[in-house]
Image (cartoon, rainbow, N blue to C red; front, side, top):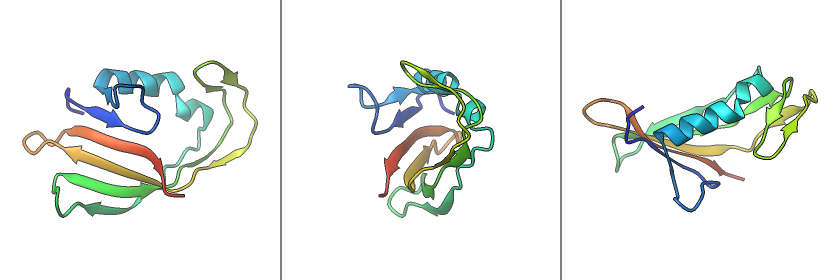
Length: 112
């Protein structure tokens, strides 16, 4: 992941994007793997963008079973054993031509 990395998603504050450190901190905070130990992103339909050859686009449908606590912004939900099945999500990842490092990721946009 490049130091200039930015994440763009539907729930980003007024800035419109999270930088590398903010994104990694959010991932550590929510810790989805602890809440959903069998979490699968089920990514498929990978394709290189014809107009942006450094961008890969794909679809994912996240599934998992809530077997651990889920930490949210203002509360923590206890494990409930329920199965999570998210709608298909459009994701794109853009890479630096020279280093091959990830510079931008757009995710969180459902297709339903």
